[in-house]
Each structure stands twice: as structure tokens, then as C-alpha cells.
Image (cartoon, rainbow, N blue to C red; front, top):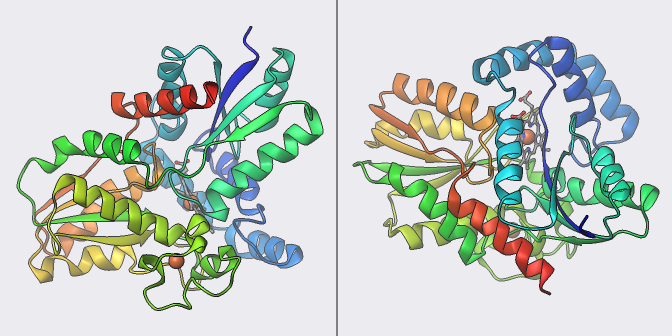
Length: 339
Ligand SMILES: C=CC1=C(C)c2cc3[nH]c(cc4nc(cc5[nH]c(cc1n2)c(C)c5CCC(=O)O)C(CCC(=O)O)=C4C)c(C)c3C=C
Ligand SMILES: [Fe+2]
Ligand SMILES: [Fe+2]
């Protein structure tokens, strides 16, 4: 048994598409103080009185549209990633989900029982957000402190601007960019605007400085929007896509407060009237296809775009099991082992 292990952590999905399982999943997810970040009693009031009475049924119907025989696409793809990475590297590759199963505490118990001393934690998100990357790191650290304080954890930093990641993203997307198209839309998962200011420890950059996301600052190490902009700029440079032929939008908003703009659903409605009738959409905030890419973009988004006068809609799959992505993960693991 190796003393080293790689721990991959993705977001997680409900156990099934039943409304009860989706409710349980949403309750755990939205009780996370880094996701619904309000005063705890208010968070629970909003959750129990407004979200949980209605959303689970709607979300369950959406999950039913993308569910496979093996289960949730996000879990199935994450397990395939675990298997393919394991074939390339010696340390045990463990997989856990931030919410639901397989859980983080179970993975830590397993590693402890197997005598693992050094863990390379990889949150499966290219970009930093307190509601995605940060909550994974905090949860793993809390569980390690409680269960196996002797374990040494090294964490992969957000890799949004890593040339090797951009190359893997480019290689996986390239076949979908070969046919003629009018516009390439990069649709990132949104977050509340407020989270940008909260993540800026200087409180003097994000949404304060003009053109903050393209003006150099240490705040960018925790600025989700900057990191999305950077991934996009590096990708279009690598792919040779000219200015005016691409843009960025943000999807999946929840609640009434302002989220990052422009909103993907609005953009999809506006593009056809601007003459952009053949559209390609990429979703680089997600490394694995999931509800938000398969249902919200490839099904609902496509319908909205075609109804607004669009003619052709191509949703680019996430990196999923692409060999370049698996190799990227293997290289990161080897860098850690050799440091
Ligand atoms: C890519 C990173 C993600 C960020 C940042 C993020 C922020 C965020 N999400 C919600 C609420 C929901 N997200 C839901 C699904 C979902 N979100 C991500 C990733 C990020 N979320 C993924 C990969 C998925 C898909 C999960 C799957 O099983 O396929 C859902 C559940 C579905 C639904 O009911 O719509 C909710 C709810 C908030 C509030 C938030 C930031 C504050
Ligand atoms: Fe989300
Ligand atoms: Fe910023």
C-alpha cells in the first residue's frame, strides 16, 4: 500500500431522481454557509419556506432528463476520471463528492485505514469560488483535522490559467470548432456579485477599480470572474478566434439578488437578432458534464436559442474522459510526488 494518495473532489449529485433524494441533496448543498451565505437562521428559513417546498420537484424533473443507466452524469464521469487516472499513476486515486456520496469523511476513513500519510487534494474546479473550490478545501481540512490530523494535505491551486490546462481544454473542444459557426459563447456557472467583493480580501479591487478583472491585482487569486475571463482569453488566443466572434456569459442563477452578468439565457435570446445564428457554446467552469451543461445548456439553452431565431446550436462537451485532461491530471499528480 502506498503512503501517497490523490483525492479528487467534485460537487456531487442526488442519489436518484426521486424528489425525496433531490430534496435531501439540495438541503445539504444549500445549507453550506459558503453557498447560501446568510445568517444561519435566515438561511434555514429561506431554504425551508421558499426553496425546499418547490425546487426539488422541478430539479428532479431536470435530473430525469439527463440521468443515465449508471446514474448521474457528473458521478459517472468523475468515476471514469478516477479509473483512468489510476491507470496512469501509482498512488491510490480516491474520489469524493462535496455533497452526497461518495462522501469526503468516507474517503478520509479509507485513506487512514490504508496507511496514507500524504494526500494531494484536487478540487475538480479550474476556478476559485467560495461556493465551489473553497468549500471543498475547507471541508476536507475540517475532516482531516477531526479524523486523521497526522495526514499531510497538499492542495492543487485553481488551474484556470495553466497553459497545460488551456491546451487540454483546446484539444477537447477542437473537433466542435471545425464546422463553420458565427459565434462562440463561453457560459460559466454564475455566482452572486456580492461573492466577488466578499472574496476580495483587500476590499479595494473587485468591482471598485475600473476594468478590475483585466487590471493586475493580487485579488485575482480569489476572483472567480477574473479567472473565467482569463481562461477565455487564453483559450481564444490558443484557438485563434478573432475578437467579436466570442463572448462570456454566466448561467444557473438562483434567487433574486444580482449574479454575475450577462446572464446566459438573456444572451441566447439576443444573439440571433445580432446575426449570430450558428452558435457554439463551451462551459469551462465544469470539468465533467452535469445537470447544468446537459440540461440547462444543451437542452433548455438550445431550445431558447432556436426559438429566438437561431439556426444551429452546438454544445461542446466538457473535458470528461478526454486523454489530454487525464494526462493533465496525471502530470499534476507527478509534479506533486516529485516536489
Ligand atoms: C462550477 C462551479 C460551481 C459554482 C461556482 C457553483 C455555485 C453555486 N451553485 C448554486 C446552486 C446550485 N447549483 C446546482 C448544480 C450544480 N452546480 C455546479 C457547480 C457550481 N456551482 C454543478 C457542477 C452542478 C451540477 C450538479 C449535478 O448533479 O449535475 C444546483 C442543483 C440543481 C438545481 O436545482 O438547479 C443548485 C441549487 C449556488 C447557489 C451557487 C453559488 C452561490
Ligand atoms: Fe451550482
Ligand atoms: Fe475581479
